[in-house]
Length: 308
Image (cartoon, helix red, strand yellow):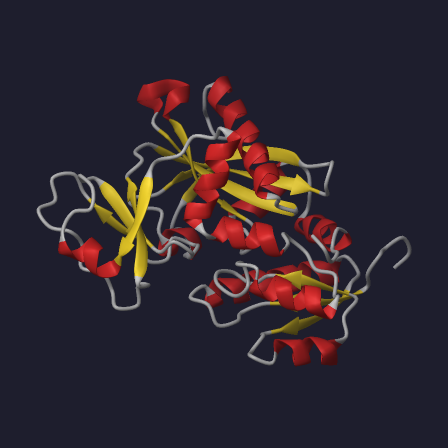
């Protein structure tokens, strides 16, 4: 198409991570959206021969719709750098840093962004005794989509019994009370802007089911917040995006304890590959700002590159 840097796009989707199903949903939606705005698209569900799959497809660029480990942690980004195929979203370093929750907090700290304290302990230690006074959260250090989250309530007599699928080392984090908020940042380098703020309402914890099941959560956008808190969410999301070195798109999640005013706002994490399913937050925020799903996907494709 005239004026486009790329025409033949491979959408990477699925893969071996614990977030395979949501990645397939994201990938199919993005592939359809790209076709709808005139791109030629091939869908690839990568296996261990992902380099061969990409060579066979010979795309102009890759739209990375993978989630979780291998797709969101710098691994597939490294493969694409090696093959010199331009790709969307963040590069190797930003992807690896943002999926590692401890490293993300190191960046937040250096950037002066608020977060709750945590520590990394062995899975056995987290099950043997309370590592910190309840309430607290136990979760993997490098998974997304609320996979493997355990909430230990205030007054709990015993630590959690963790699934055998939990990693050898886990994060134990102070529980952050309050309202669930999120803000997307979109744009090529030098053109990044924070979109609106969404409040996420659920009947319980905003877990994997609440995120991706139909009716699992309700989204209020723009969130009904004091002006200073709304503006702080946008400012913090943009600062986190830039500090982590994210590219094209990210979404930062917050908790806000309204009893503490602006001081009750803390960052939970920054997602370099935010979900793009029918129930996802980022496409909703883009649409609220007048950007169609096809336009959003096209913007990501046109910013694709190596050496990100």
